[in-house]
Image 1 (cartoon, rainbow, N blue to C red):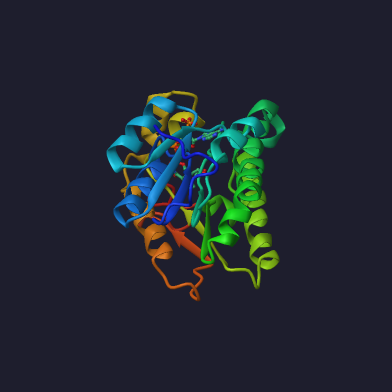
Image 2 (cartoon, rainbow, N blue to C red):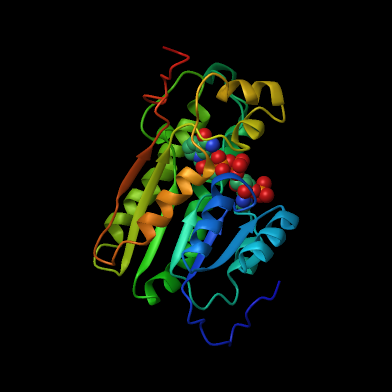
Length: 254
Ligand code: NAP
């Protein structure tokens, strides 16, 4: 990995920063944007995966923990040009009633999804503005649209993350920055493994008996949003499997 020096001229290729690119939707988005011609700067905590991805797509891989301001500062250092920021890092921990809420899980979800999005956006807003045609994509969820039983820790965090993004849409009006919120339904990634703390059986059961989205399905939509001309803003894109009607109902729940 070679990090551009801070005094180096801005690259002539358009640059896309993707957070949480070590797996799932983030990795697929990094691949899709690289295929669309972007120089992709990929970040996540698992540096081995990020380094391998960067080598595969001819991008730059850097360690990134969006819950750590110092890690973010090191990640963005020397990024003189940024055209796209994909706020994707995030996820869920646990599934249980508010009455039994696990505070550490709630804190993790808030720090990663909400504060992580705020911090990354704040750090890269000057570069995105300077690009003259910036785009901020935030991957929220159908959990940002409605509650579901036992999901309050995640739905609260995703609603909050979405409101950070939707507020930016108002605050940045008149600036050369588009904002796209992507709200996926069920996507088969490592999401449920993380949610259920490595319980493979429980994670697999989430997707058994229906056809979920793949990470590529979501990544293609993000790349499409990025490909629109500067005056076209895709504000919200809700993408679900045909087998899922909303956050509460799918063909298994009836
Ligand atoms: P995933 O496969 O578990 O990917 C999550 C990514 O986030 C990983 O690359 C992980 O990398 C990264 N991440 C977690 N904590 C981080 C931190 N502190 N700093 C930097 N990166 C961090 O799950 P996914 O489904 O692709 O999730 C991507 C996004 O889509 C999340 O925001 C999730 O909430 C959202 N989403 C998922 C679904 C779904 O059904 N899968 C549905 C709606 C929305 P490291 O662990 O290497 O840091």
